[in-house]
Amino acid sequence: MRDLDGAPDDNRRLGRIVATSLLGLLVFCFATGNEWWPFSSFALFSEVRGPEQTSWSLYVVDSDGEASAVVLDSLPESHWGSHHVLPTLANASHHEQVAAASAWVEAAGYDLDTVEQVRVVRNVSAVPTDLQAPVEQISQTVTLEIDFP
Image 1: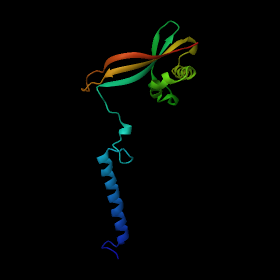
Image 2: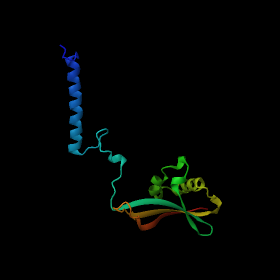
Image 3: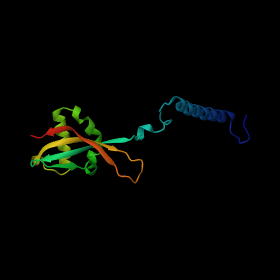
Image 4: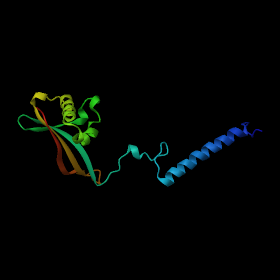
């Protein structure tokens, strides 16, 4: 039997079952707090901002003892995402630490022969509630020092 639009009843019934199932799954995910794609609030792709924000930076110390910051955002595309590696670098072997630091330092344009040490620094800043207010740095801690031979 067909309805007024000429579509078979089976197709309409199937459409209702699919739509009802999707809506039911959406409500279930909301009620239980599950994050199943595509029924998520995209928590995997956003950061919840607390009163403090942690960032990581890399400093090169030359033979004169002068430290200069490596701007990770200016590195070539092959080094994008380096800021995700910095927090875990302390757990790597010394060989892996030197290899990673050497790659970043060379990509930033430093001469490895003049590099004495590379420092990984953890920066903690207060997150302002007013968008016009400046970011206040709370602490800066050297978490890793990689000596170059």
